[in-house]
Amino acid sequence: VVSKLRFSISMSVDGYVAGPDQSLQDPLGKRGEELHEWVFSLSSWQEAHGGEGGDEDPVDARFGDAWSTNTGAYIMGRNMFGPVRGTWESSEPWHGWWGEDPPYHTPVFVLTHHAREPLEMAGGTTFHFVTDGIEAALERARAAAGDRDVSIGGGASTVQQYLRAGLVDEMQLHVSSVLLGAGERLFDDLGGGPHGFECVELVSSARVTHYTYVRS
Amino acid sequence: VVSKLRFSISMSVDGYVAGPDQSLQDPLGKRGEELHEWVFSLSSWQEAHGGEGGDEDPVDARFGDAWSTNTGAYIMGRNMFGPVRGTWESSEPWHGWWGEDPPYHTPVFVLTHHAREPLEMAGGTTFHFVTDGIEAALERARAAAGDRDVSIGGGASTVQQYLRAGLVDEMQLHVSSVLLGAGERLFDDLGGGPHGFECVELVSSARVTHYTYVRS
Image (cartoon, rainbow over all chains, first blue to last red; front, side, top):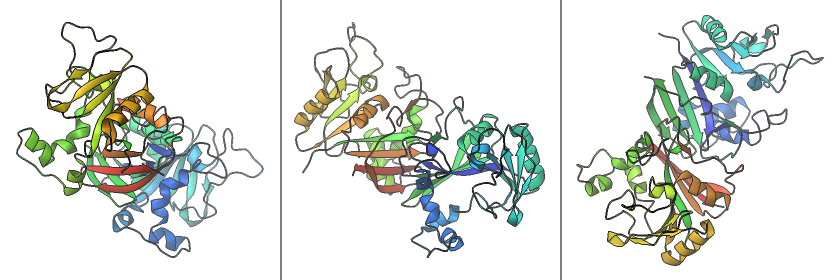
């Protein structure tokens, strides 16, 4: 078993993985939630959120928890962790978008320029704040993950940094028919890349297409 | 029957509809042909080009001639017509990429800043050179198409002009798993759009996903 660095991300057909103008009201940017509607329709998501199940497609169900399966640690950018910019000092320190029990249940390494003590949440999630770059974050995440994989949670800028460094082993794109028109583009600032990926599976439901790539 | 303005275009998952550095050797830009490999595998294309048929998917076969079905006239940009820039004067005037019998078999309106006499080819294709803008080209194409549709052949810049003007009724995107990394992006310079499109079908083979949108 080899631990991989991978990501699984929902994208609009016009290339955005988040809408513009992230804020407290719009953690994923304006209209960003539309990228994830295929997940919200899954019975696994519905059950976890008190819904009634739905009209899920078995193809989509296969990919709904790809981001967390066999993941022993996460890496995310500061903007994915929260809307705070600059230092973390505050009378009410930001604890992430996800409430007391975030859905990670592993160590999560947050890339930031501003140091902060680790933040232990319920359910096994601890946020660690890494100020010395993507390689350092990856090293710590690999150590925490053991045999399991390290997943990049996002957003676009964090994924791009790891792609540019040639460190990503596997990527999954979930491309819905949404046209966002603005926001954070995944395939940008990659200097003509990413290079060296082979598509090993392309499969769709009527909602979304799942493209899986491995480093060849 | 209402005549529509529409387009059907192959795109990489990172958003490009042509590679970079178009030239005589690379009409579609570097690696641009990879976008169309799903078409080359179709038996209709194989038969037309002396091939042996292939491993085509019935889903792809449905979309292989979408660009030409019920099309009474085409509009294309000057770069899609050829690599010539500036005036058309030449000892060997450019006649398009497609040889004596281009695959259009209808009038084709080429957007250009440089006037030129119409160019009549074999098989019913006549290239008309339109110097007074996209609305004028559309008006002439509609008159030529009658009850049939007007198809925008490409490239990206021409499609964008019609999308910005809100004139497109239907669009089909054929998104393969290719990662080009550079080239001509379809969804660019659209001012936050395109707006007002509804996806009416998303269906894929193992090679390519076909997204169909209509103006809602």
